[in-house]
Image 1 (cartoon, rainbow, N blue to C red):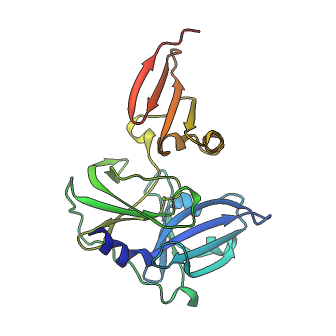
Image 2: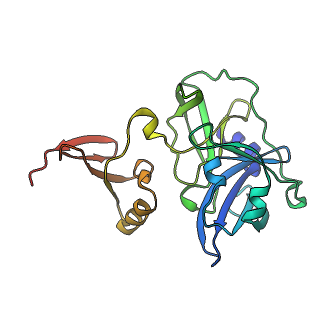
Image 3: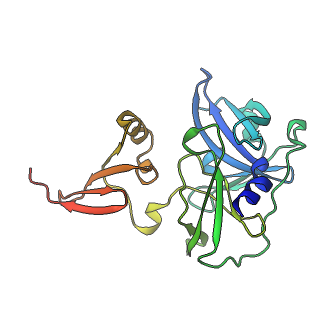
Length: 248
């Protein structure tokens, strides 16, 4: 099932990489082609400090480029056709009529809103600023609506960089949603002052937390430590939460 989804969908997934005036990478995300348009998150499209944007589609190995083009961030912004901000539906649709992308296949958007809870789903994206495309499988865990926005909760591993990628129904390889950030605040799980330890590479965890505190919810193989308003420390290790009282 998942091999079929990879074979039918990988070529339509786009790596979106932003660089600054020093040509240094400052951020990245994922998008996917529908017709002659690129669909992604609005919070991926908005990249403060960006000067250039590279769009890249991959071959079947998920690592070598089938088509790519670098444009200015100003041009990238000018291609926006429609979008809504992150605190709303968080999507952006941009025009990509470029000859370089004419042979890139298009994904199909599902015309049905009925995908049952417990149904298998597949997510594709360029996680952790990596240049290789990844595929992840899980199930549709829940549905809910907040501020008129319809959310799909999944149990698949979704990481920084996957934002803007498609959520696929593997039965027909159609798009049923767009991957966005983990909305801990949506379910009243705002993060307290937090440290994250990434086993095998502590420096990685430190740098990621400085850049984005919410990465604590996304990194695999971690221990997260925080303090609440009562001075009680908590820590989360491999998904099992324990508490200890501050003895200081």
